Amino acid sequence: MATTSSAQQTLDTFGFLNIEVDPTLDLVEEISRLKKEKNAIILAHYYQESEIQDIADYIGDSLGLSQKAASTDADIIVFAGVHFMAETAKMLSPHKKVLLPDLKAGCSLADSCPPHIFSKFKDKYPNAVVVSYINCTAELKTLTDICCTSSNAVQVIESIPKEKQIIFAPDRNLGAYLEKKTGRDLIIWNGTCMVHEIFSHEKITKLQMRHPDAKFIAHPECEAHLLEKADYIGSTSGLLKYTQENPATEFIVATESGIIHQMELASPQKTFIPAPPNNTCACNECPHMKRNTMEKLFVCMQYELPEITLPDWVIKKGVASIDRMLEISARAGL
Ligand code: 13P
Ligand code: SF4
Image 1 (tube, rainbow, N blue to C red):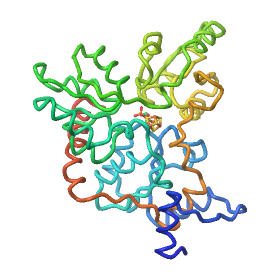
Image 2: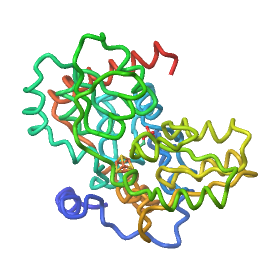
Image 3: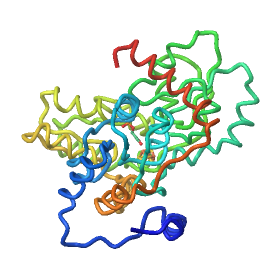
Image 4: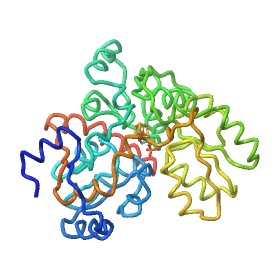
């Protein structure tokens, strides 16, 4: 067992418990054993590596994951996702232990909106309702009236009286998409997701010429010029559902490539082509999501570290914006 002080030291340095794992261990078996022993639930986002998705108890988009975090009766929630998702789970289930395999699994959108700077921006519009995409820090949620995800953002905007000004943070692409969908003028924070901004219009067009029957599907975090040519726009679970229900057999997928694992499992006879980034790197993989590995997941469950902790005031104030989002989603049958 790592001692408390050595554990803290390695967490401060690396963001995860940097303990060597015996390479002969069957990690699937070990993680399954720990789940049972500790009454733990593993919640995984679709952008996690395939092996992690395969061992998860629940795989979903940000809305589904929040709903599950709010309703689970497990003692420990192990979040195979990024920091803001684990924080959201902690806010919804404050008495449970919430673990994140790597504390440095961040999010470029959350980073793009520092609460102290946003607070000054918000002061310029004292009568505006603040809607924040769930991809933001817990502290930003304390400055937010209603949270939203890509699954319920339209319903959240439409729940606000027409005469009210709305600030939308932090994703400018989702904000622009919502303006188009709802016909509302939004005051939009200028943040972006590093993964969804990288897709190449030119390469996608060439792919479409080579695969004329393929449907082009995109996440609303993508830039407007890509969304304009999409056959379908939706959250990760929306995209997955579309590929299951649409009779097409080829899909060009403009979101993080981890989702393709579930698409292939659900429709093994169909072909899924990840939309290419505008250079040769693997930039359509989220480097934050991919910080989680099976080894880190195992160590995190064994030592019950790193744990997400939040000040009480942040939980109390911030959770109200998530609760409002969940109420609106429930009313809309989402
Ligand atoms: P959804 O899974 O809610 O569509 O969100 C995508 C995303 O970027 C999560 O970080
Ligand atoms: Fe954040 Fe983008 Fe990664 Fe999602 S894909 S966690 S929005 S950086």
